[in-house]
Length: 232
Ligand code: FPP
Image (cartoon, rainbow, N blue to C red; front, side, top):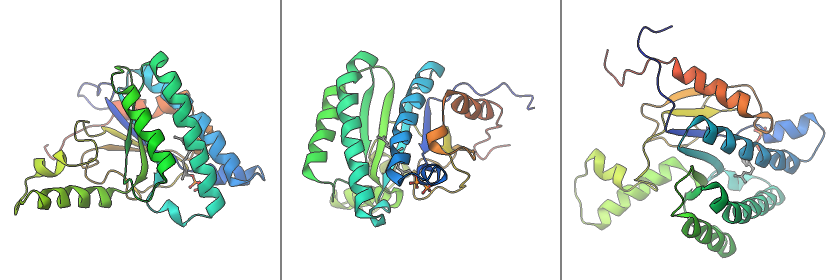
């Protein structure tokens, strides 16, 4: 492998959790059964990340494009999200998890927005792992939101730092590693700005089957990558 020292454990790992539907289909189950199993994989991944020393985990839970899914699947996904938010808010203190939510507020229902706000505010002082849920998230929308915020300030010219400062979570470092499950190899409007120098790890494993072993495989692959940031 490389002669350079191995990369340290990434501070920030982002995951495109894909393959819930195919996992369910293989078992002749409804798609929602795949999402339920996916929620369990979220918990395993949180534990694995914490154990490995990762500080921030960004998970793509619902994209701005996911509204085109059948209404009953959307309803089921949001029910699952509400349950998860409730549980994490209760358990967060115990585990020290700080919850952040990234995405557009429109057109999320007020009940979900209230739960998000409560979950975020009641965990903000926690100093353990940061779980950043990308919910109703689209990266192009995020960049547009930053540009519009700058225009509203009267700026006629922006710097790279100006745009970074107006993303949904300007305080977070860019993810060093982005994982996508289920064999698909694309970004799908996820973290376009922040991924400029991220390493990518693709695995055929479907999200509901993802676990600590798989997470550690991704970290091991990252450890051996040569990161040049445009240099030589
Ligand atoms: C992609 O699988 C997954 C999603 C669109 C939703 C992700 C949601 C979860 C993992 C469950 C809940 C998460 C939290 C944080 C509570 P897909 O449906 O696109 O699968 P397919 O490509 O096989 O159809």
